[in-house]
Image 1 (spheres, rainbow, N blue to C red):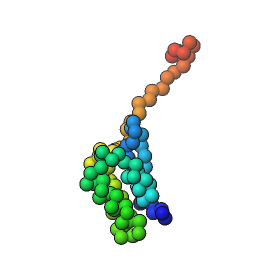
Image 2: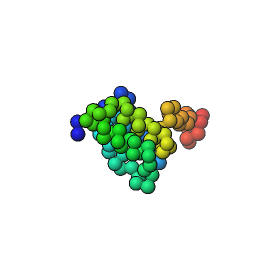
Image 3: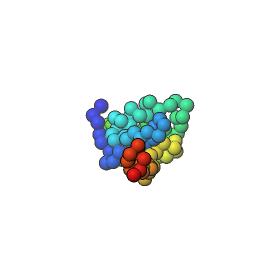
Image 4: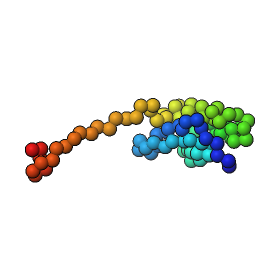
Length: 100
């Protein structure tokens, strides 16, 4: 399959909070094919159909991307626009591992 890229990737939450970016029709097809059978519904089928129709050019790549975003929102797997903040604090190391 000739790969067609999205204007910007779609970030999805997979596994235990890991992010997976879908940047093309081929990646979208692979992701949807791997999707759990028990969680497939109408928006899943719309995304699959949009992907299948975009490959030969019957719908635009961005229409397929939009169908993926709608499916991801409904499934609760769309990565948030704002990256989660990871707390970090500086640790001063002195004698014995304690701050001097």
